[in-house]
Image 1 (tube, one colour):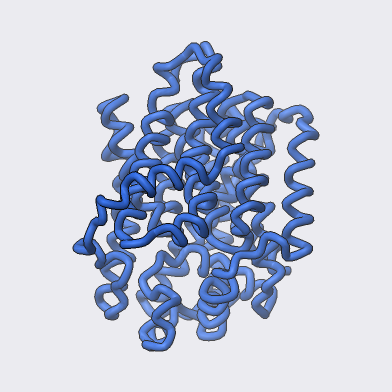
Image 2 (image 1 turned 30 degrees about the vertical axis):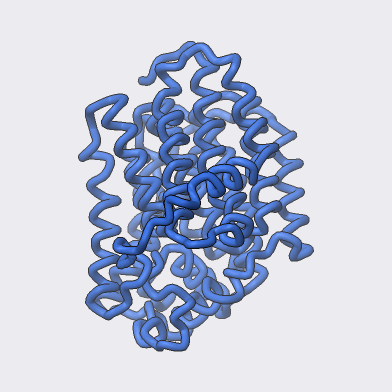
Length: 393
């Protein structure tokens, strides 16, 4: 019931069924996009309810869900054709989740407890976040992951730790289906599935917010690279900034890359993410929760630059090779420019973040595989774009 309840949030994304760019895709990709956009819209509704004091109940959340579902457009969608190799990597991820081999400690220490508390209180529990003994739960961390888990708990009448874990292969599958829908390249879709499955398993990030962040990153990059779809990209970036602090850094890099490569549509793409992130930061500041967003004055340790670069680049060898090798056969470098710039930018801000620690060796060892998967995703999108003779629509 927990996972089924979260999947029901797809109805919040019913409006995407009417978008021309989405209507050109196969059925699986359309459903995946509706799901991703639906969890963003549903999360924003839950956040708004907490701000204005409406409790999260089945009936209060069902009203906007039913209204959103009314926008669903019944029309035929073409099948994608089989890509059975994708299922191998999804099944491997399900196996890793089912045996608890890929579970992140973050699920146990803060994603899960926060979501469980929010579910029990039917709102974002500010008092819980303010309690000083829970400081390491990151009180101002973006709320979307916990809101999704709370939604699932409302549907199931209880929080499910296993349900939270089983959402990881759902996010992985949705990421690959969207990528295949935009790129129309089954070979690179299999590559993305393999890299995501390997990265999530290697970094043990199941149950955390990273698989959800990867979904939004894939959608944003694909929408801007393959279809110039500013509306879907804007929703995906809104999801990214509301999922993790790194999502805001990713959005800024995408903004810079978009300005460099297109010099258009930047405001259209980034108005919603900026508004959503601003609203959350103001909410956190109003309630005295600011932490991660208030560390801009921390010291940089440039003496660690050599070590940071060496250990960061050496942390993810196989995915680096898998993502970079196809680029050597690329032809359409103009089309691949945006994801290549994003890949460079995400690598740069990862190194920049590590330089804020006097001795970041342990931090790099425990997080690099998880964080660098964003850069690898951008390289795979670039590879698919460079292998195509088509121009951006």
